[in-house]
View 1 (cartoon, helix red, strand yellow):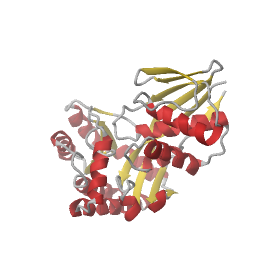
View 2 (cartoon, one colour):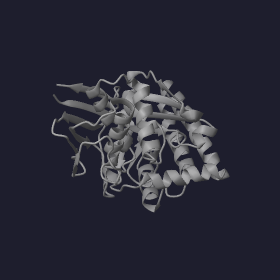
View 3 (cartoon, rainbow, N blue to C red):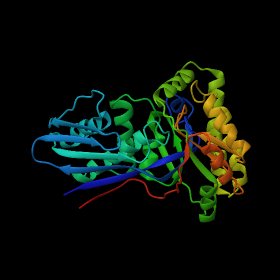
View 4 (cartoon, rainbow, N blue to C red):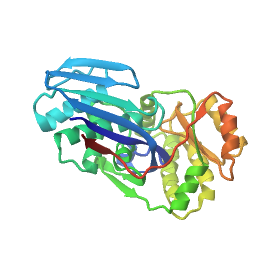
Length: 340
């Protein structure tokens, strides 16, 4: 028997960063995101030899361990270890023997939520194998707790919920880590046009999002007024984006993205740099009406809104800078798992 799962990566269209505590606890957060046809995959092959093998194919890392009820968190494939430790603690109460194989379609630090999506995919595979009674909210919450609480990794809450639910969602974040996912019903022609005009560009750089997120958290805790006002505006941006897409007013998308970009840069140091500013300026000069960095910032993917067939001119100009444009489509489905 083999158990497999996959969960989609996401693009944060608006509101990014307002899902991070303490901002979401104090003021409430709002994010509009959409999943795309890039995935994190997990495969579990049960064993009976008392060993645990974890292989991250994309990272070319493999570890082999004795099967115990707790795996040491030592910097080697800790996401998988953290998930195993939590599931043994909460559900099986006994050691398991298996091989876990993982792969992610995007590199670490890309800004598409790859780490959190991988946690969802692995959790989903274990839930399928062990037949755990977990719904969508349960899996997303558990994935968030493993990553943010158990492993003490800095970050927000949107990625786990996006990967689990899939589709285009307006998410609201409250204190006590409460999250409400509101799926948006978008006309097919609107979604197709949005996808056609959206260009996803990999800058060929990655970053440690935790550093930027920790700076953002510090600014909120210390009541830095410029950073706070910028974050308030980012939350407003999510509402503006939701209304524009639902009403089919796509001519507003570029301005809304640009509004968010100007405020995003004020949330914390390290979100942008000279190279990213030049990339943004190049896209605008060649016909994009707005754009943003994907994820916390500092590198990874950027995306731009390019109406009236300007996507081709923007694509050519950006690829002269050494990065590449990645084709994508929006997806409707979130986490899926199966066995055979």
